[in-house]
Length: 133
Image (cartoon, rainbow, N blue to C red; front, side, top):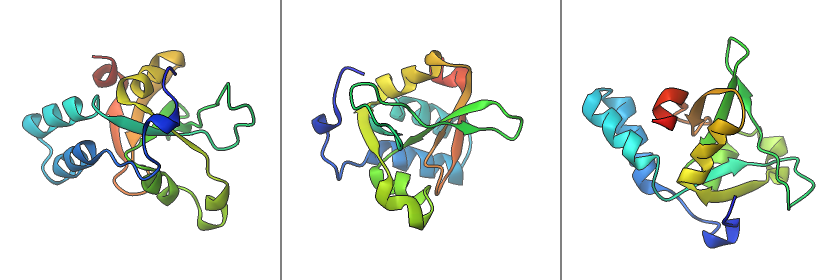
């Protein structure tokens, strides 16, 4: 990843994407899907790197689908990441904020079937074909 987390403020929130996620959740149609697909490629995204011990080589945490397939969790803010972590473990949460296109490119680094945005609240899944397209 070319850009460090310091390129974005710790209080960073990708409001355009969050708004697009909320709109699509409330009214899932082609127009709101198209807006979501555009918004997810702009700004920055938060990647969960909890447990990483080598800052030069961060490890991205992943999820498994109900069928055991890899899903990449991405977040619109650090606050959203913390919502996805049990309260007793939040103090140890590690995150990196990266440009959205770089975060989405992680899908090509493994056999991910989808990304899931804001797992702790909205939990919107976007299939790999839409991420790579």
